Length: 77
Image (cartoon, rainbow, N blue to C red; front, side):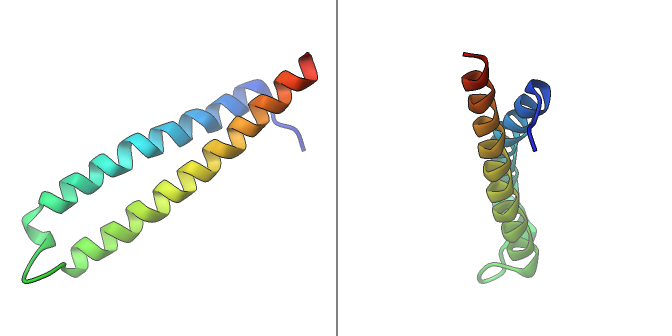
């Protein structure tokens, strides 16, 4: 299956968006008073897992998009 140029760049943009947004969200969770009570709370742990999975998925999707963009450039060259 081949992706078009628009879809490829969309995936790259989604990957970049995920890498920018989710760590900033983690900063907010880190500073939230519900995150700590003599150690991390379940609120913190659930959100930490959410952030980790989202960043990994975002990077993976971005890599797929970037490889597709590079493949399209090779086809057009």
